[in-house]
Image 1: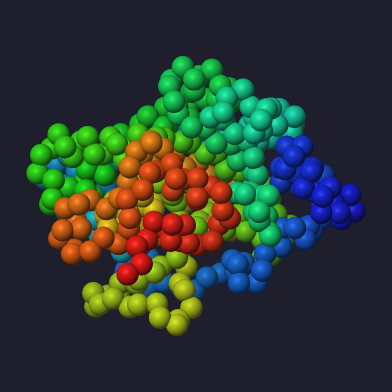
Image 2: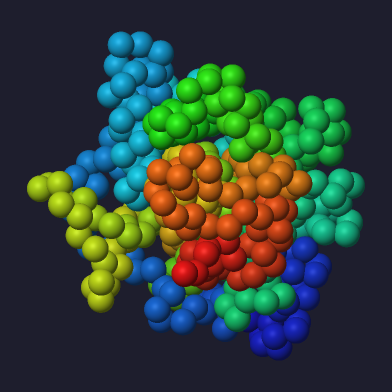
Length: 382
């Protein structure tokens, strides 16, 4: 049943403007992906990607026990966190303080929300939503994308507990709010480690204030990837780095998240630069009870490039629908961001300019996914 979507405008209206989403396409009975979702060959994700070096494979498969930061193993755990943030920007954590039962409940609630009839979800579309901080949509910037992403989502920006309980969807508002609060505490603990590792902020109260400022804005997204008849032709999310400070991601057990390895650390400890070689992509394996943590652009800017916001993307699947639930943290839009002055003094150069966070966010959300191009908005060219 693809004939009714042969015209580009009719598909766009059905999926985007009418709020049916990709889920509506799938439910219509289509047997092949419409042309609007077919990606250029260089953007497609093969089902099997060559294995990365064993040390990277080991680090991404071996989660970090965050609870050990409170014991005699603090320095060892902190070193592992810093190393991951400096090299490829992704790591997994366990014993993070977010109850596993809560995570399972959140995933189940997410599936129930997206299984609703389209009109139940469409009430949260931009312009119709009861709150400007709750948005239901599809793809990333569908008005500008040449090829659409095979994804529906609902985005919920946190303002107050009252607003969350009043305006977030009933299916998951309580568990999503608890997820946000408990995961945010973990984010602060990790950020204190990462910023403390610079050795430039001796006053603990100043460090705590900085961490609070870098996480002043919080947003929970629930992403839904319906089954896809042609996963080899599509993408769930295109190549991008996250815009904020740190992201926490809850995966389900199906997988499909891939990170680009900009610099590969070999067993010898030497660095192998990309050069003209094909980029390497590594799947972040789903681990029961674990959360994925990754560096965002703003932390790369604040660290003057020491920490890396990793480029990543998501593959679709024909086996079953899946969900992923990221918590994005960033400064408030009015907050000024830029490299820490102490790091600029140490490095002898500022790699990024000072700017208002909201300007950086607007640039990111106003453009299609295109790798780490969003960082060009803040880079200083000498």
